[in-house]
Amino acid sequence: MRKAVLAMALALAFPAAQAQLAANNTVELYGIVDVGFESVDNGAVSATKLTSGISTGSRWGIRGREDLGGGYSAIFTLESRIEVDTGQISNNGAIYFCGAPAVCPGVVLTSPLPPQVAPQILGGVNTVNATLLSAVANVNSVGALFDRQAFAGLITPFGAVLAGRQYTPGYEAFVKFNSFFDSFAGNPGHLATINLRANNAIQYRAELKGFTLAAMYGFGGAEGVAGGRSERPTVTRGDDFWGMNVQYAGPSFGATAYYQQNRTVTFAKPNENQKGLETYGAGAYVGWGDLRFFGHYMKKKNENPVLMPADIQNLVISTGGNVTAIQNILFSQYINRWDVNALRGVAGPTDTDLYHLGLEWSLSFGKLIAAINRAEDSSRSAWATADAKVDSYGIGYYHYLSKRTWLYGAAAMANNKDQARIALGAACCVGGWTTGRGEDSRVLQLGIRHTF
Image (cartoon, rainbow, N blue to C red; front, side, top):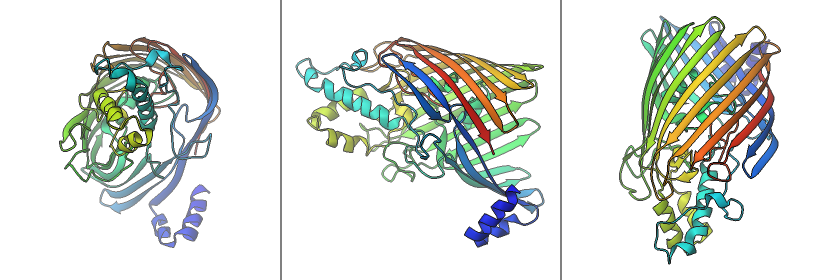
């Protein structure tokens, strides 16, 4: 019935597309609608709110496959984000930011500039940092229609070649080999930001008897606040990406290793192609009956963020603190989420080690998951004068009403230490920042997830 309805819709709206529905060919409409309640306590800021995509990001998509014969097939996927709470396609799940000393006295930034100058610019510096955090706290900063995935490819007897906007090899391996996947506040991705997707990317994939090899190269198209998805015009390969993973996934054992790297051009060196975020890691699981145990380690390092603390302070001085002038300069840069130190909530370098231990218990009527995560950042800058450490603990439960409809509940806590101020949120990524360094974050989540 669903295919018949889709065929009629395609025939009416796009007559040429009707040819795709011939025998042995498929075009499918699919998606996830996920929404629930969150009760969040982030230091001096707390909220109870309706949130889209708590267990998995809500989405809809169209995917198709045409059998070309001889072991060859053509495929495509177009997938769009949905924010069920508002109906929008733009996401900004990280909502807790602090820049004003009166509101968040624990995170006022210090200045390495001479004492006679520093008092005049500290207010501007804090405001710029808060603006920057808000700007990069998007997972689809440009608000594109098919933001999640948009690619076409060819499957051959020797592997598949895919071209377009795709999940990166590191992210694919990271979420497959932890007990929370990318769900709830307890997942390890809240503690360490990884590049999720690459634009203008070409990927080679080979899968055989549980083994997977993936290699990808992205020809640029930053996700940052400049809003561009085309290659950087001024510096050759200035925001290119490359990465790979190897995986084995069996019923009782699985393992993966991965590496990926982003190139970048910094504010201080606008004509140089430099190494940006570098990420690598390894994970595994072992299963006994209905139980599966996970272990994962990830390293992320970025010695060349687009903006360093000194850049921001000099920017405030050079503009006389003019907010409009500052924002015009900031938003002309290709600033990405990983240009902010996620554990500290400030612009600057990152040097983070992430550890994950997880449990998955499959039941006839549901699934229970649990995790212990730890992240440590040892980078140094004018605003990172001590380590940032955080331990998070999470537990989640899915209750199956049917194959397509699940109820869920989850609870998590992040214990921030030293300069860490991670705030937990919904699926995938960091939920923002607590109101002070070393303040804990607690989240309770309840909701429903329906797939079609």
